[in-house]
Image 1 (cartoon, rainbow, N blue to C red):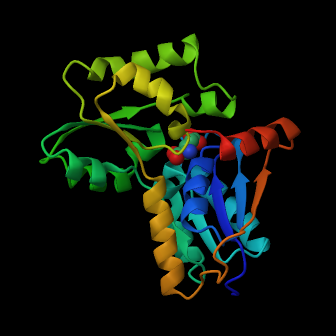
Image 2 (image 1 turned 120 degrees about the vertical axis):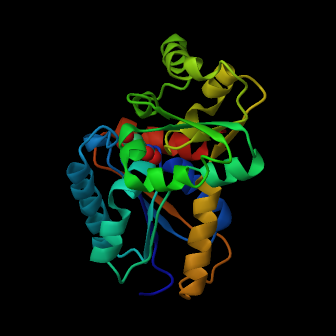
Length: 258
Ligand code: DGL
């Protein structure tokens, strides 16, 4: 597969654009094809088999368009389907996403860490294995956030409704000082300033997007698949919702300050 082919990136909707931004910074010479499945979002409250089937559709959609690698820019999709996708498509590198609990625990030993993610992510074995590694080294509170990604899908980044949602979900965990908040869903970095307002100035807020970008860079280099261009790469944004307003929102998220 030629190294000048694009890198495919997918998410259940617009959240993966937070990963796409990090990918562009690390790999400015690459072309990217982004697929957001907003029509069938959210994935996070669907049964495992349903998420696996949707992820398979997304990967096939990208492969039919000639991508050289696939980045799963979604914690939920990675937790539910990465292993299955890698077994089914062994000829294409597939890079996944996971909540940035490892860097949070390493930077805040003995600390209090909140992990915000979808119900599906927190339910899967992948997350349990990850959190088990750190439970003796930090107090980790997992916070399922059903309905939170919808704010981003609807273009809502502030306001009373969002504030009330965040207060209801984060408030019960703020009884003792928090050292770090892990954004374990790729939609949440777009809500960073609203989350900051609730948790206050002290906790570090982490997301995994740069880690995924570095991992993608490493895998491409290892396989000799890096585009020789050093910049000038393109981005093509697609969405399963055939709605020009959605494409416009995607474009805004790609360029909006976080
Ligand atoms: N962006 C996805 C993630 O990283 C989840 C959103 C959804 O529920 O579809 O987990």
